[in-house]
Length: 334
Image (tube, rainbow, N blue to C red; front, top):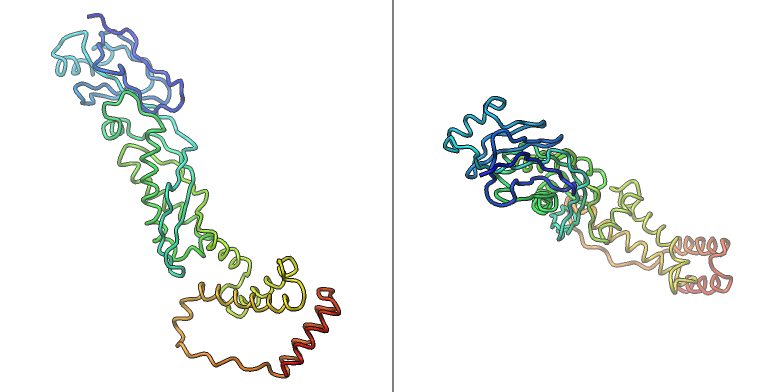
């Protein structure tokens, strides 16, 4: 039987990691044939599913004189006959970049302050084959072609499975998420890199582009970052109240003195609710005491309210008529 003169493989797609020659069944190799292994390639000879040797880059003349390995290949596995039958797996050893990963469904994170939070995340990574024979044996098997699309699907599962473990080890609450991005990325690279090595792959770079909590949690993170001093309840309440007052002129139905009073109360209520969510630990350390019933406004409180009301009128935020109506309402509470 006539053998093949030249054995080679060119990756025209740029996405193939492994290519088998021939695609199906064993190939017939003639002594004196040329095996061409291109830059960033390795070629592995297989017989009956067993890898015999790995050929590096270059043009190899398959003779027992130039490649002493063939003496063993022919005499032992092939019964001393030529031409002989074998399969060659070409492995692309170049670095594959811009591989994307992301959570197909939200990852449930146990948060120390917010209980359970559902997180989504995505990013990119770069890898290459580190051990060609291990990768072919453990992953490719007898497939005639294996590309980046095939490997990305199960590598993504590794990444997402490790993400929840790493998040629990690195941080306690997603409210502190912005300052932990570097730590999470480093921990993920180390953990996922070990998984890759088990299959003959080498993780070069790993990037977390975003970890996205629900919208309500994002609002809490933004408010916490904007305030600056997070742990002070009094400052947080003042911050929330100022935010509510600043938004009032644009709020639907919020014009006038009555709307202004409602905005002040809403701002204080929002501040209390937010601080309760973010300061649970501090609250647990203090004994719970019943709150006294609300007392009627004191005289000095009425004076303060009138002063603020006058200031609003001077700034043009309320009309003269609204000022008079609100003033009469405050005085009637005495």
